[in-house]
Image (cartoon, rainbow, N blue to C red; front, side, top):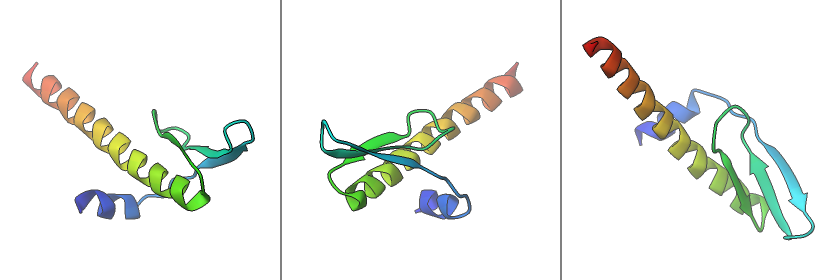
Length: 74
């Protein structure tokens, strides 16, 4: 629940393309490492990108907290 609140305060933009070979929509969220996904429909892709974004931001937050904790100990 906290992740959803945090996401609602920020805006992220995605780039979406149709891949005629795989017949899937593919999307990325620039400047968020690892934030990419695919889906058979735009709705499926948007849901997948939202889930991936939440996971990527959570991972980035964990890394940041680890860095700050290490810096404070040093």
